[in-house]
Length: 281
Length: 206
Image (cartoon, rainbow over the protein chains, first blue to last red):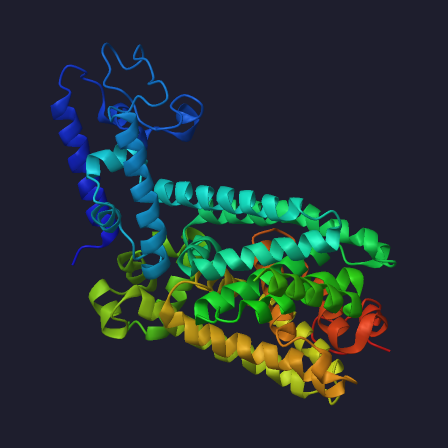
């Protein structure tokens, strides 16, 4: 039995050969016709955002790099196919896990051909990272909107947690994709996950202004608090226990705020948040 | 010489530490153990089966050390502190197993989920024993112990690949986090001042 990676490699080779046959005039190495084999340094800034190259005339050294959008697909078609591939990746990885999801699964679910896939992405990891980046960007936008309505740090924290848990409960597959599977998707994905978490640490650190004993708090406190909250959400996702968002929200607000504000004030913030949500419904 | 099941497990542990789980093939494991792929498959039908066997052994071994330390002290949080230092010693003595369990396999598969629940459920129970010594157990959030264990796990995961990680030095901070919800700020801060036992586990607290 062949592994999914082996099948992907064979399909990749087939696409490379197909591309070479379709563009005989170019006579450039397959590695240059297909962006996947270029080292990162060569791609950076040169072939954004599509990661693909136009068929080229002349020698590889003289060949111009494609302008953004120059992937041979009509822009609207490329965008639509990209969207379908990203959605399929989120869905499949959340259900099957990263390791058990192949490019074959992704293209079939998205109803997109292999050639189009490789015109849009370097491979499975690249597609996964694009889906992860977009999920993070959309979550950040939703968080910014929720937090902008509040002026005080404790209320901003509560509003942010409230929005994140609503997003996760509304789309657990996406939550599982971005919070759990990303950790099993290789070093690049894990590094992005870490960077994403790191961006939240300075926001948490603002809470020290509310703590009379802030100077004595552990330097890893924010990392630990964030890790604890993320862990709880991960566990609820794994166990399928997201039915009672209100209870989960109340607990996570208390856990996140108590080290900075004390237990009584953290509990009060949690209760106020739940009251506000209840009055909105 | 006959290659034992344990030899294949050790070879997988070593190779995964160097290359990462995804990059390790059964043929490599078999060769490193001095066996063959066919013989490996007589012990483990798949690579994941070998990984699960490693995790089972790891969990049993780790819990024996940590639980034993916890039970050696009569009072909480002394019991939790003893368990935390025992855990730190276990990690220092088993870096490859820790790497395998936390970095490579923590979320790897549904097959490993039950083991994860078993192992972390035991840690959570040791933290949540704090309810027995707190004045008002009902005032403590249900997920408190889980968040403490999650905090510690995430801090460990993020620091495991850093060189010169001194887990002993981290224990007082982790104890602060674990004790504060149950016994309050003052008792938690005391944890930051309690000297660690020596590296063999003999108490240094006065």
